[in-house]
Length: 319
Length: 179
Image: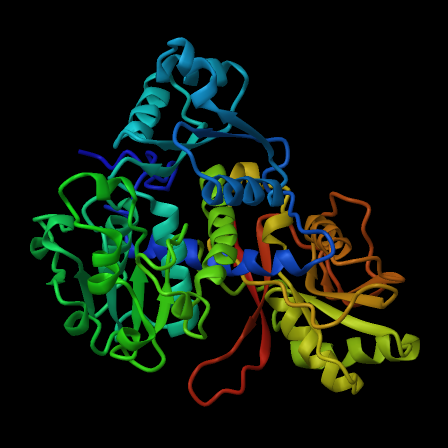
């Protein structure tokens, strides 16, 4: 089956997941992002690449950081950005997803940035566009269900490369609720594609998927063992709703075992960096002393995220 | 990508390093304390580096990549190798000299001017090139030019840098057949 993200010439036309993308494509996005980073320091923080293009932010699920950084990225590319708060509009009145898309196509959309609680929704939209002959409209997945969050994965890779230069010698640990995390899935896929030496996941049995070993990932339940000699520690947000079910006893208990404290971080390499996709739960998955400490690069991730999203949108729009 | 093929009509091609020295001599009389150089990637950036040395300028040259300002983005997409633009000085009120290897259609110059103005408002901008090969599509003319020649559109004029074993990275001209 052909990769639905690539056009007939093998160029990236949608970004739906990191899965199946060649290493060269990932590196091309990261290299392009590096060129966009400096634009934020100029007198005019804009380039004219997407002038006259309409980018629709379709967020069927709440998000502040991701939606805002996509909006800033599109605006810095000179696109016109339309934010649709779908929860409050058509969907609430019963319109189907694809009817919404058809209406926006009739408004001459050029790109959709989609977040949806259902895994695969951006794929459905991309396939629909192709079926309708809209081959010049691009889709960016901004997070779908438990499946993928490719721009977060890419900005995490950008951050790691910024601080560590090369992936090959690195041991990277991803800590927390891997099972429900689209960020973890995208990070793991990207790290493997980019050749990281070792990818570890650390978490309680109930929050780890069962297919990890087949992906070449090392599984740890004891954080003190898993963090040893890591170069990069990626903490995941513990979603509060997980507490209600039978998956976890309590936030306090979770912090005791899987919260990142200065004392646990000391087990990683002395120059290890600490990342978090946000929003953080201080005192649940991360101690404030770590979140505000010298090894945390969490706010830099946000800044890099804008440049990475500019790179993705400009590459798609040109293909 | 066509492979470089030497064409007989303009052979031998002039010495690009010697042309850099002539270009520096053309620029020197007009230098002011406010003058700063900005080279367009990649050829113009190499020449700008040479000029900074030849003219004994106190500041490094700026380097500009016009990929985000090209007018053929809709047809060709983003250039596969974009490099960060680096301008290590404040362009406001400076007398800039934009440096490129070849002046051809004028579209690259237009893109570079647009990008420079997103960094601020220079006092003036002049254009210095090693070669003007004709075929202009925009009203652009160089202030300083060493080599005027007429080439058909089917021929590309390329400035290259020799980085092979034991070489010092000297600049040289090549012709490409695009027919």
